[in-house]
Image 1 (cartoon, one colour):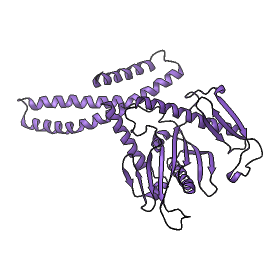
Image 2: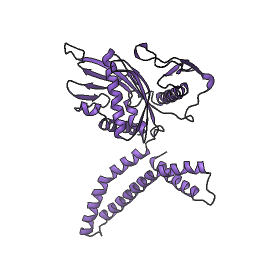
Image 3: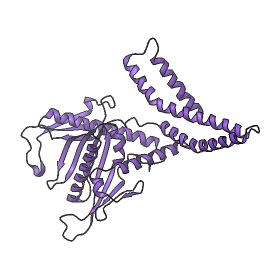
Image 4: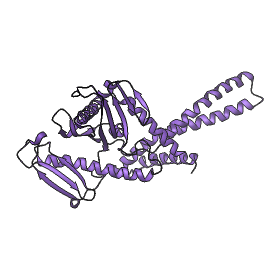
Length: 357
């Protein structure tokens, strides 16, 4: 199907939805809501199509006027000036339309489950994991998102072995999804008397928070164990069997929660994390099937690759996927992530546009 045929199909669908919603017998409430959303989503596309086609019609008319021997000199000069302006403007209109036609990620508007884990590097890796977790908490605060701690496993020296949070708000997953991967730090540890630079790492996983309608979990596929919670060093956190461990038998995914004193609350939190992990695994499987020939794309879900380095001696942060280095380490760790996120989003759009052609 040609581009023009696709555009005609968009315009036709927009008119069809308008007619259905304004008919004497409108659809049921839930169907009407779906139609309203689709109609609203198509609005900017229809506007861009109309603007582009109008510009192309206008440039055709101007070309005819310029070529017409009967056109006066003054009128011809004006036509040539307008023609040049339109010729410069049309590529931008085409680019805007292409961007609007890019397939939307259905998860972009979802909330997210954020997991940060210490990697290689011992205690220093735990301290870095804590730095990253606070960085995302501050970024969430800067965007007025809700940041809810779900689970925290501390090292006892100020670091985190693992920290899990729910982040909710407008466009959370769309903004955070490129943060998944291995983050590396280069710095002199406070405990290092020789002043040598150490390299350690932490892994970040950002998963869309799934609703029950997104992923079906059968009770028969779960094994739920309860046990007594314990804190760093093995000391008892509470004296009842309130901690919960849920194992998803078909996949082997295990989620534990012990932060709450209530077994019921721990189970509810664990189910949120499990649902997100299963949904993320399903999305990754689908992505891998669609993108088997282009594994290196941003957002492929491959978390084994080092994505960013935080260099303390030189106060710089480098994102290796887009070769972007910013010399504002303190600002980044304080939650100033938009420059990286905007660049990663733009790079992803360029790659997806290339795949469309």
